[in-house]
Image 1 (tube, helix red, strand yellow):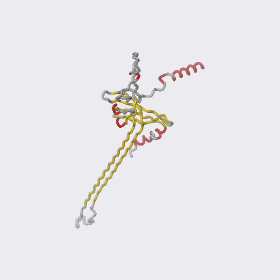
Image 2 (cartoon, helix red, strand yellow):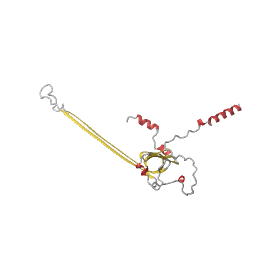
Image 3 (cartoon, helix red, strand yellow):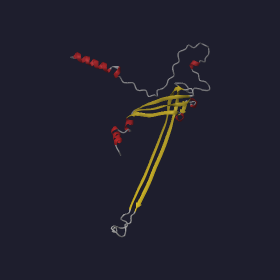
Image 4 (cartoon, helix red, strand yellow):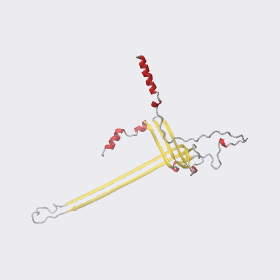
Length: 223
């Protein structure tokens, strides 16, 4: 009996140790840094000079500006958006009718204003919506692809682990290499097809969200 328990315990440990039950690796976010391909080792002939291109070369007209895959540059996030919309409508309608009964005959007992009728309807509606958002931050990204027309695809992310959860800023877009200044910085307003994500998860983020039961009743409520 004891040997059987030992065998069962060993089998359970073997199942738990299998790679299939191991923790799955995180899914790629699409903002991973791009690294340059390592150059194959080449034997450099001894020329007797102190200058070697393989040790790094920066031309005078280009300096050390980011221009190759894997080079990093700094994006200044200076996004600001303000939108406002106002709508209003108003309608009014009225009408009236009057019938004067004859002074003699079977309807002579009616008063002159007994058959007067009138109707009116009024509608007044107003709506207003305002939205303002701003994002100011600094994020370093890497060049993922250089294109023949002088543009490059950049992407990167910054993750922060705080006491109440995780926060991250992700950025990708297309930049002109000519717009990069000598400090390798570029404003986000000069990036085409920019994709910016600022999100997080944790106790603070969950406290700012409505619960699932409240979301359910909001969906089915007719009011």
